[in-house]
Image 1 (cartoon, chains in turn orange, green):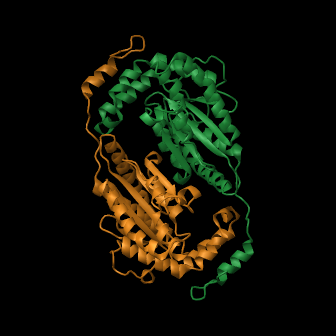
Image 2 (spheres, rainbow over the protein chains, first blue to last red):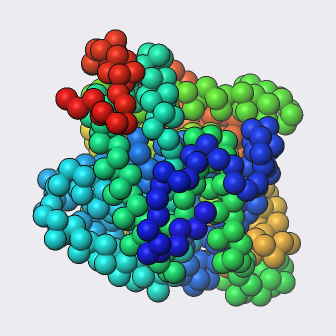
Image 3 (tube, rainbow over the protein chains, first blue to last red):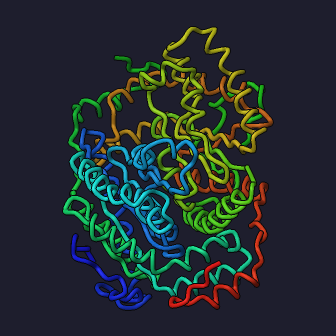
Length: 280
Length: 280
């Protein structure tokens, strides 16, 4: 669902296990997502090809959501459809000492996709109005100022040919509990678990409130937020694949025409031999 | 085939269409490569997981070969097996003005994989002893010095936990002609064609010689070169998948053990409620 800006969204009124559109069961969802894979890869190749002829457009997928909401899973299963050459993926963690010396957008600007690429942010500048708000990592006034800074920044990206697609992966409190417990049930998943996750989870209502504010204030015409029900992984993967497909189809990138004489090149290639190389 | 260093290799004695080991036909090759995919992805996840507990190891796959030899195809079809999050892919083109201000290894150092990652170079520092040698882009003496610089550099990577896997994609002169002609037969592939490719192709013998020298001088115990017959794409993909699999299996990365009390975490998670959050 596209989030209407300034509409005072109430996250608790959205069912995280819902499947509001598209396939209604797992088998159909997996099949539909697999079918989209080839189409996505084809559009990505066109976007890249077009960039070699001066098309400056690119796509930026921003993934946000509570721990275990499936940001990493989305990269693996949805972005996995694309040619990895054309993807620029960046996971944002706690800022480093170097990053903290700069404005919160500094590290973001350095990780943007180049022309023709699909950029993927696993967390993003929104952390600076989410954890920063909940944990009071900056003065309230400064955090309030960041929403408009973000909107200006994202508008400048859109003006520069970046299609910004922001996805909030909406999971339920109970689903997060199940997923965290799963990590404790399987020693191969211990590495994904942090005791700090339990402490963050204790602040669930404050995080949901922080997300509501970010979605309200920063869902703009240039860079809208999309709320994706994410309790069902197959539905999440289908919905994000579909969202990317729609945006790439709207861009409709085209293979560039030849900027050389095709016939002449063919003749030269056919005439070349190893013993008497066809030098210019 | 692992290239023995200092052995005066003669590339013309290696059949580019050969299938020296492994599956002997396309159907068997595709099936065997697909089977390796899951295993590769599993080992990559272990490598990444181990890095979260301090394991500093990583892998760097260097892809070199003539135009159309399949460097891009390898990234798409072999690296496509991995989780894109853990891959750091860099295609090296003609150096930029900024890059030319620095030593030829400067841009290479900036593109290395981080711990736990699999880095992929589509072309590399070897261009500085290949096209640079053929096109005389630097004084002969300087180019000759670069081989030992490269060996020192790659040894320092190995010492730092980087498994360096260097692949020369060996195609035949006739196969390159066919692949270039294919690009001219399909308007969707015009963008992949450059008239300059015909001019480079005219220098085929000089390039083969430059590769022979690079393979001879820079196939070291710390960073050996592998010659992969690449006229058959299915064989190339199988052989590189197999090479990566062998190296990852040798690393044998392990999921880290829990550095927290699993039972206590489980109890805390089960006790948490939304109305009375289990704060520390």
